[in-house]
Image 1 (tube, rainbow, N blue to C red):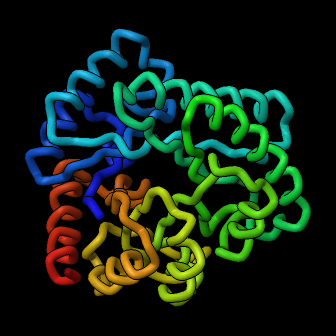
Image 2: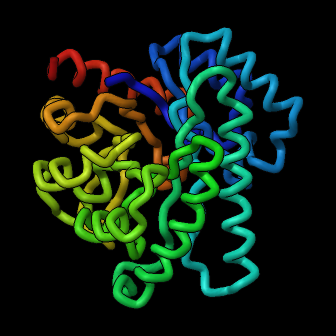
Length: 276
């Protein structure tokens, strides 16, 4: 396993500054966030910008294992839903453009909807994900669905149902420990269920239980990351463990994206050393 950082925690940082600084901290991978409010928003990444990012990654000891393209797959407004799907398909194209000679980054997204809606929306979600999977597979890209405490897809059981319904090698899981911790699920349970299907992992701490929870930086509680890493390894995961600074963390007065990244690196670097 390797240690990465998500630019989810760096909405205003220029990518030309962020990537070298993350590499200097010791991170060997980055998840690029392309949501509208980011300096690396999809709309800003023309061919020239994509070429600069490829060159930057090539000059650094840094991989691009994932792209954060999160958007709802369950919006009830037909026009918004169509725009969301078009955006994800364009993000698939971006992954191919940035890949160079390597494998394209996986595309991370949540499902949308609300926890209580699952029975009503699951068939529509499976149909939507299945259609996206066909397009992703044509480009050699994997779509990684993230179970999220605040969405309709919020448990391992529901996630496995979706994977079984879609049955595509182009659909896998982005596992985020905090969303299962927020609903009080034992780590052994969610890792055993989802690690074999995971292609990317987010890590962060959480305080409280959903919906009255707060996401924190890794290391701000006593969460046992060495244990988590050993469990992931035991269940066959060998990809990136990516630190994520949530929007809740970003809202703190005086938030410093580089200080947050450095704090997360120290926590996980220690955890790797303690685990193995």
